[in-house]
Image (cartoon, rainbow, N blue to C red; front, side, top):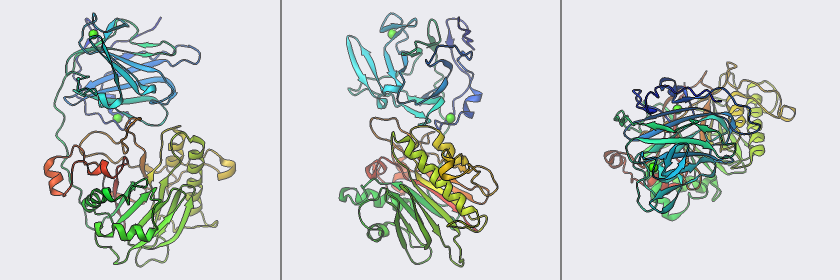
Length: 480
Ligand SMILES: [Ca+2]
Ligand SMILES: [Ca+2]
């Protein structure tokens, strides 16, 4: 009944892909174009309401095991589904749980964010950390990519993913669809070496570049036991503009006084400190703000650079409603875009000289419907009655650009790492790329940096997580 097209699955359904995996878990899927699909069951089956599993891709290197999955509808990957991967990690159908022709020794249900490992007669509970799981996107989507880490370990130290051939099936436990639909799939890893890491340098490419550091500190900024970690991180990153979110404690001036010793000398000789928005965004800046505008939980700062009467940079601090508040988050995205339209249109409350760079940076909390992402990027306002017509928010009537700052030490772009949910890209930089060039940019994490790098920048390996679960985003602006 299914037309399963098994590419490369000649003899015993064994697969060993020649394609080397240099894949990034970033919610973009162009990188999978070079990887042959392992299962392509693209013909949708009309099972009312149930999820149809359509395509599966697998690739690996000596560090990660990568997966691509396409389904027939937009779903939330880490909630509200019961899609389960079953792995026969000892490649022995006679051991483990019998399902789809394999003997599964390990299973993980993505929508429940938990799984289990069978060890002899014992069943051990697994969370995402025990598989080294990183996935994207964190919004709803019809396709997902994720990586497991070889040699990841369960709570008690048992290896969950040994580096050797295995069998698998993926099942939607609700509707019953299965990929592949019979006899499982056997995968022989290539275990090829990853490309060498890029050189880790935090310095600006040019000393004139204006560096913004965005960091959701969620009330942790004044914790005495975190002061050293915050100080080392900000000293290593040397921001010109420090943009904090959820800095509820202390006035803007108190926060400036507290962090100034960790910051480089101000570019103007002066420091200005502002705070706005219901989630306490705080901006420490060498340049004064001509206007500070609360936008729900978020806020806008219109900065006046030396020698100019009008604002030369519009910085919008994102701190959008969290978690399951999809409608509040959408309303705030609409409100922010309506504000950008006002900036760009003569009349109204605020005006910017044509071509003034606009940047949105901060915690967008995009963990629900992907519409919010499209609103921020493309101006697709949902509530046009309240916030006006959809429009293209760059000055040349195109969408903004999503910067996608990368990590140095791993091919991932998540900006939040905590317990309970998978690591996710919650923090974003969107900007008017028709009028603004960007220099160096990255997600800052100390975990997994080479020892020499940590020493060079006077950092300790746990400094980033010891500040907070959100990682700093660093972006250098090339202003005229
Ligand atoms: Ca990707
Ligand atoms: Ca087995």
